[in-house]
Amino acid sequence: MSISAAIKTYLPFMRRYARALTGSQDSGDTYVSAVIETLIADPKSLPDIEDKRVALYRMLSTIWSSAYVGPDDLAGSKTWEKTAALRLANLPPTARQAFLLVAVEGFSRAEVSLILEVDDAQLDSLIETATADIADQVATDVLIIEDEPMIAMEIEQLVEALGHRVSGVTRTHAEAIKGFNANPPGLVLADIRLADGSSGIDAVNEIFATTDTPPPVIFITAYPEMLLTGERPEPTFLVTKPFSPDMVKALISQALFFGSQEARAS
Image (cartoon, rainbow, N blue to C red):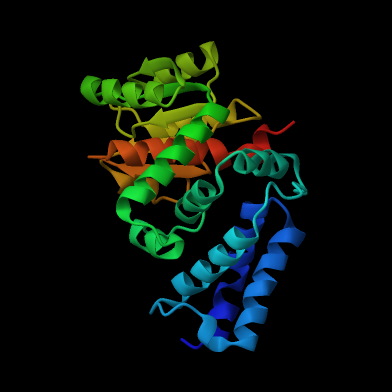
């Protein structure tokens, strides 16, 4: 792919990333424009990486890091955007980039290492820092819907390790609805197949139907194909069993940071 074709293809995503980094559309576009102007002046300035998307993001990340002096103008057009921007501004700059590259832009860990020019251990530290800082900012009550006791216990430990509170551990559709109504949580972690043969999807759908401000939901399941129906609640975050504890921790932070924020904003 040529440089011009790569810019045309990835420009909207680069603008999204830059806006999230800076908290401002105008400020983010300034950094993206700097990338384009630099490439026009010297096409050879693009990092020598085969994947042009990775190369462009490394260039953008480098320019932002070199110019970053503090929080930018947090001028999101909606309340939830301003809230997200303020939360991001509280993250250390490189940890902020690592979090956004993984959680928003969908890069693999290997690609993020290339973009940020860090090794595996450094990347682990950055993601751990971002996850812990975000958890501190968005600590909430969590409802667990899981019929396997050992898995429920493991999830409960992961949730509490991040500084959240478990509002209840439920095993059936009826228990899930009762638990939600008794203490409405800020996050739901739900299995799909429950102890009484009922569906966690149905329980979540009922929860969504009874509240104007539904919390984000993470489905943790051995049956991901059951979500591919076009009828699942949105936004949906999915973890497949057997799961990695680190993946669940990261996804909890991602879901609380970005999930259903517009719906929950006042």
